[in-house]
Every structure is written in structure tokens, then in C-alpha cells.
Length: 511
Image (cartoon, rainbow, N blue to C red; front, side, top):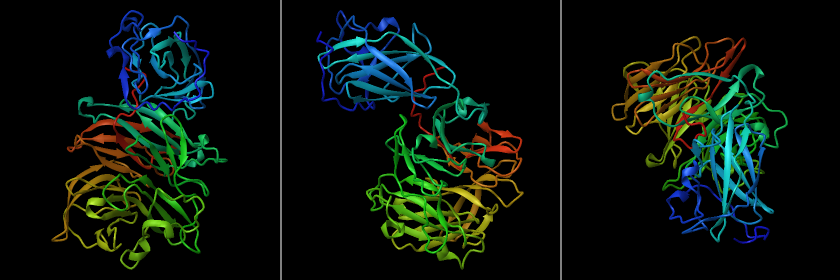
């Protein structure tokens, strides 16, 4: 076994995306014993070993806080680049969970490796053992170390979960923003909930160094891109920028600061911020945002080029790939043109733009021509069902139907509703509607899941209201999963949009 005091300056970033189980390797005497309750896994990028020779010198590691309750930093002192693997669980003798590569990110820092572990739960005791495998197939194993997680910095914001029909629930995690009205929340929060409704990941804006005074806003849109990065932005303070967040806590500003977009009037970027999927289209890979004119309540949709640094650009529209303002249809709508959501469909070369006043506009991405308006002020005649009121979160489904969250006029009941449109005869009919039993003043979302269910985001309101509830319902309206948010005196929780995503964290607390 080589002298572990030797230094290797050529350390590399270890990206844990394709883990290889060492237990599958052909091991001879001296290999890690799979019968001791540990099954190491790791990245086989540099190490291809027939045998792994484990030293009797224990690996020196330290576990420390990251400032985030659900993440820990593991400092591994090896002096050179190695493959780090970890066994992890709530039992010191036989950990219940082994990292599979998606819950730890490591990098060479000076003379040691620093790894970030995530996917924890608050107020739990864990046990961790780390293995370092060197390029010569020798290895060191640490002692089993205990550590505890602390309390969440926003206690009791998310309360009980009911799962009356678990066999009908769409598997996965739920990504959502989180805010408390009346300033009770110190700053915007993004969370990931597991299948049981428990928080297994969060990010607060205090992790962003430019924040000096957070705001408890509830209108931040969050989304997950194909690379496992979370995008969050909109509804922020003036001067702040939308961000890309990694599960390990890396924060990268990805868009322009919140500043005026309309000339000569006060405006700010509003709600919408997400990365478009890659597609065979000139606009692929861009970002979508919406800017609100606060004086006259018109909005602009901008698709921004991800290769452009917008941090010092005064006029975003001059550098946008696509721009459209609801002011262009001011003579066709009676209400204000505040834009709350956009669904971009490259295959149709169109954007479906949701105006809060109860209008959906289909706009050509090339010509910017308004192809039609759907709503009480539009061209369609309703043959069955009713039109919608103020709305959020328009989604065009695979069958061409439109699913949206209908807030309804003040004092009326809110719902998730689906429409079938006949664009030849310009008629529409309601094919599905789920009424919430309460009025949601702002926010709210409706997502069609792959199993046919619909995830309905809770939105928010004002004053003392019924507790917002995040629901998953079947096409027949049966509730199969629901999460109640906080209502306490004059304070209540809100979430602008909630999305069911594939499980992206291997939870460290198996049942």
C-alpha cells in the first residue's frame, strides 16, 4: 500500500451521476466485506480494480454543518484525488441506506476532498462510514461516525399529509416554492417533499450573498431542468437575480436583475422563470420570464438567450429571442393583462400565454401574431360547461386539451379545469373540473401526471382563510394524496406553483 502522505495535485471534480456498486466487483482476500452491513458504491471513472486492498489505517474524516439543516459537509483527508464512497443510515451496525451517487457531490480542495451529502430529514440521528479508493486499488475506510440534523429554520410551515389511496398516487417528489403572507416568513423558500409529504431538501435566499433583507414572497416559480438543476425566480426584490440551484447547494445567478422592463413606467419581473427544454428550434435552451407594468397592468413575455450575460444589459427586449406584450391586445380585453404563466410548444411554434383576467392567448413564436384568444373575451363558443375567471398555470396536454387553475372571481370557488378546443369550428367544452371548496385569490397550479391524475397546487389568499391544501386527484375526482399548509391566526402559507417530479434524491430515511 502506498504512503498516504504523498500528495497528488491533479485532483478532479467527482460528479456522482453514474454509480457502480463495488460489491459487484470480483474481490479477493482483503476486499471490503459485503456481509458487515455496508455495501459501498461510487464513481468508477478512474478506478477499475479486480481487487481492493483495504488498509488497517482508518480514513480521517470530519463532518460539519453547511448552514442548511438537510445538508452536511464531509471533509476527507487523503492528500490526493480518490474515489469517495459512503454508507449511510440510521443504524450504526447495519445502515439502512447506501448512497447511490446522486446524494453526494465531492471536489478536491487543497489537500483534501470535500463532499456534500443531502437528502436528510430534520431532527434525526444518522451514521456514516466513508471509503476512499485510490488509483492503485488500495483503500482506506473510516470509523462509523454519528451525527444529528437540527430543526428546520421555518418550523411548522408544512403540516400533516393524508394519503387515503396510496396505491393510486403518482410516484415521485414534489417541488414547490413556499412563502408566508403578512411577513411571517423571513425570506422566500424552495422545498422538495417526499412521497410522504416530508421536507427532504430546501433552499432559502439567505444562502445567496447578495440578499440583505429577504422578503416572504409566495410568487416564485420553481422548475427542474433535464440536468437536475432547480431554477427559481420571479417575485423577488429589485436588483436580485433568478438562480440555478444544485441539490448540493451551489447557487448560480442565471438571469437579469429585477429592474424595469417597460420604458418610462415602474415595472418588475413577475412570476415566470424557467429553462426551456432542448428542442430542434432556434429558441431552444432559453429562459422565459414575464415583466409587469405596475401602472397599467400589462406584461411582457421574454424568451432570453442563455448564452448572453444579462447582468449589465439595460434593455432586455433588445437582446431577447422572443418578446410579446399583452398591451398588443388591449383593445380586445376588458381586464388588465397581467401574465401569470406561459407554456411554450416548439412543435407548434407557439406560446400559450395565460392572462390573469381570464384569457388564454396563443401566439406564433416567429411572427408574434395572436392566433386566437380563449375565454369569455375570446373567439370560442362554449358548448358544454363554463368559462373560467382569473387564472394561473396554463398547460397544453398531449391530447391538445388545455388544463389550468381557475381562481374564479372574488368570493367564488376555485378549481382545476380541463377544456377540449375545436379550432376548426371555434368551440370549446369542459371535460374535467375539480372544485376546491374554497376561494384561492392568487397563485395555484394544475399538473397532469403520467398516471392520469392531476396535482393541484394550493395557491394563496389574504386574511384568515381555510388552510391551503396541495392535492392529487384521480380523473373521477377521488383525492389520493393531500398536504395541508399552515394557517395560524392572521398568517397562512402560500405556494405559487407545485410540480410532481421524478424522485431525484434517494431518501436517507427508508421506511
